[in-house]
Amino acid sequence: MLVSAKEMLTKAKAGHYAVGQFNINNLEWTKSILQTAQELESPVILGVSEGAGKYMCGYKTIVGMVKGMLEELNITVPVALHLDHGSFEGAKACINAGFSSIMFDGSSLPIDENVQKTTELVNACNILGLSLEAEVGSIGGEEDGVIGAGECADPEECKKVADLGVTMLAAGIGNIHGKYPENWAGLSFETLDAIQAKTGDMPLVLHGGTGIPADMIKKAISLGVAKINVNTECQLAFQEATRKYIEEGKDLEGKGFDPRKLLAPGAEAIKATVKEKMELFGSVGKAFN
Ligand code: 13P
Image 1 (cartoon, rainbow, N blue to C red):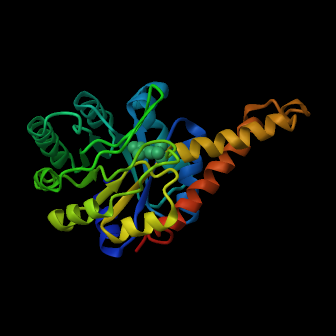
Image 2 (image 1 turned 90 degrees about the horizontal axis):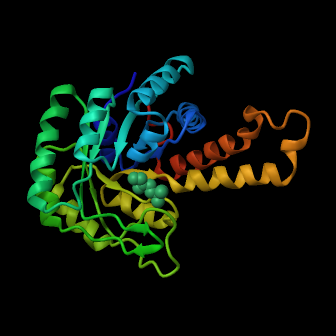
């Protein structure tokens, strides 16, 4: 059964660890993440961007696939199916399709409009028992080859949005999606500290989990981060293992062309990445506590 992310994140914040959100792209991704979570007895959040949603045929297909896997793979750890960086329309579509958790990213809107749209979604999610993530201060990243520095959110604006009754809050603290550039200034712990001081028990979300050094991850968790998003790192692990398989000519040996063989090393590499992150985030063994 899919669950809202509320309980797992409340426990994570109180227990000083973080739950990983791992973005999914297809069946192999989803299966690898779910099996690893079950093996490690860790709660987990499956993230779906709007682009990945379209790629996988649409939100209803994803809900069907994930629910089927929970049953047929006997997954008993808490699993939330979460829209990542949703538009207002996307959020409504995922609520209707049966997602258990929604992110509305109004960070590029004027703060009053972000507040108004987030409020509408707080009401809809509360009625259905879904968790809702809001965002203040946009997360940087690579767009058309230009790498933007991650913005630092205004702690007052964070408080304003947290007080609307959202479940968790993503706040920019200099983090960036994708690979970090050589000259990245690192996370702004001063900003994070100020945000936590204003938002109290609110579980904070760290986007752009790929490539953040372990010591910074641990410090962020100590300052209130209870959810960490990882996407690119699983993609890179999959790509590297798949490249190796082909470069070693394994696809040319026997039935090595069978997609179930061709995609297997990549799927195993995703499992290893997810395991490493769950260990670092401290969520291993926390599923049934
Ligand atoms: P990365 O791709 O940098 O890991 O970021 C993932 C993310 O924040 C998804 O919202």
